[in-house]
Image 1 (cartoon, rainbow, N blue to C red):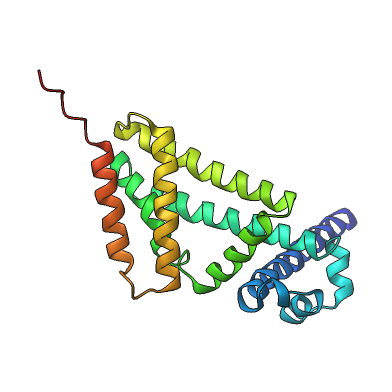
Image 2 (image 1 turned 30 degrees about the vertical axis):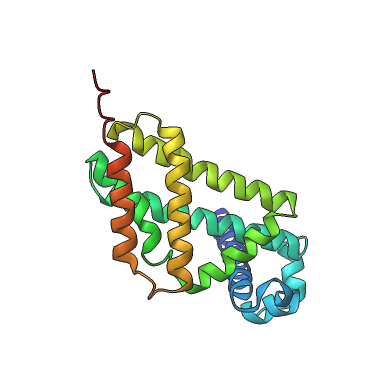
Length: 208
């Protein structure tokens, strides 16, 4: 009986610790989105999370560790969104590819707060080695999964196409996030679909 109670207390403690860490990570992303890098401080994060600065230092070595954890968590969450979109499209390779690419034009990826946090992460990735590594790993993972979706669709060079389409989707997502009235999610999805169709079409035979 006592062993069961001890195990239950330990499980509760782990869950509580995980919940506190998650709250701090969410609060950091929210501060970055609302206040930018300049306004994101230990005080601001703790106020947003409703905890004391001492608790932050208990779970993280400092604000740099917390921002890196927020970037990793945000990247992981977006990866899960894209993977779920492809899985929901069913077994058809072309439908899976389209769903994966166009998920960037739907909530939660188009959440205005995500743009604010993401641009802060990008800015830090230019000068911070740890943030740069998270950025590189995140984009490499996205392109690798995109390459794996392109291959069954008959792509002749899935590696190069993955780079091209990633850049295209990123550009459209950024414009859509900055101004949702510029062309709209449906138009963005249609542009990507036309590009994919053209890129996957077989090259015309050379004249004899």
